[in-house]
Image (cartoon, rainbow over all chains, first blue to last red; front, side, top):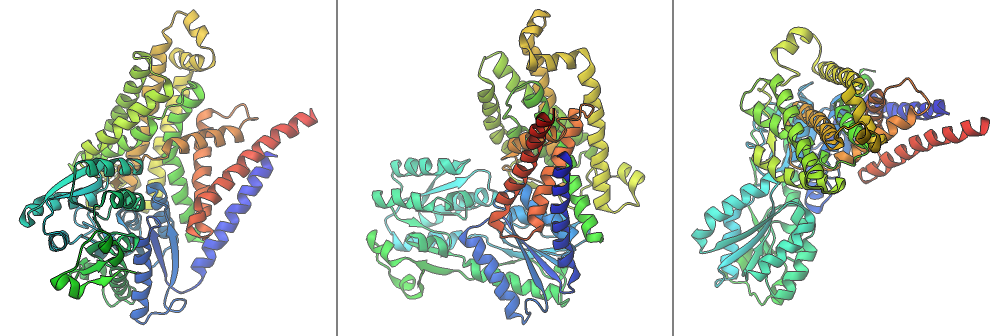
Length: 320
Length: 298
């Protein structure tokens, strides 16, 4: 019977092999997408990326094919997906979020495959600014956000922020918030957590400290339980500001933030240049989005009794 | 065909590197009968120490030693908490694991990546002198294989020494150890020290291979270790002459192959874990049917 076990195993391996071979049998270059996990912002990045390729006139199935893999927020799996791409000789690796990008860049070393990343806050810190690698950064527009909060809540003094201590993006964003809050007359009350289960406890802590509002980062852990935070803050009558459009859709009052779909599209355009040989990664420095939009949720705003004034009222876009 | 070969080489390398972690879990879970959760903390500990040393230009081979020592200390702490403070085994591991989450971040600052310019054990001078003509992915396989086989042999020898036999006795029959006038607490601590040293070494090599440390890389490693040990020992249940360490290597390679198959099948991403789970179940079920079948024949 042990032989049966091995037979089964060999059969499964053969199937996998066939899949791998059929993938490399076609002459169309493959773009391997390594997405760290499934949530709205990262999904938007991917959809924007595909749109960016299409905008450049490339047709899926003729000019390229996509091998999309999702690591389910597991670093080990992200690594294995990356080495899988390398073994399959993909033309380009597209990495969405930092852990996937570092995994891809390490795996690409063997064959010097170009890596295009997106949704990374600090490519320099992650050593993704040199070599056959480029992409787009989703660095938060902290000053624009502080400015927005000041305009919507002229009386507010303290901003509460929850962040995950193990997410480097969040740690650097908190530092920037603390540095710049004074310029806008705010103080920052932050609580660091190490796991998703602690987020709602942290929300309780901030509410009990009497903060005037919450502001979110692009912290995967915190954003994952945003709905339960909103439940608590709505009860306490404290407005929450999001860091991007998806959070405003969920019920945050407003955000000066990134549209991840646009970010992905910008990334797709870069990938198209590399794929068609018009440029190399070395020739394309990583890009940051310079224009930020105001996104608002009218029903959440009226619930909090906030009225829009001045330029915010003019330029804000309803998130839907 | 080279694609498939590359795929096999990559998977085999992963399996070998993680087999070191498997050795560690084999010692605590299978030999000592101690469910040690320190693993989820000592694995990233090895990687954190390695990443910091590599970034600061320390000789890459020395990081192997540093990781072993750091892991040994983690095991020592769990051992002391359990034996001296008399905290239950499961909780002792949880305490150390929880503390290590903060300690790892403290050591590394935050998640760390090692630049391509920095040499790892796969690219440094002595490795190149020995295997310079070999492409990097094969070099990774060979270097990992050398380390894994070396530690397998060391462990096999150790298990035959008096100390090693005592380790096995504590798990099987603790009363006997006390009757032999040996302190079973000390032996448990020894086991935990060796186990976590190996786990941290595994984290160290993963850091060399992936050029990065992340605070969350330890999550789920103890589950992986247990699955590896159980798959390995189930398959070789009826084969007496196969050593436990060999079974662990096979188990680890099978585990990584299962994930590789799930990835290669190109199914919807969310089904990845489900497919992996089904593959495990099939392997374990076949192992157990085999047992039933033998009985019927007998």
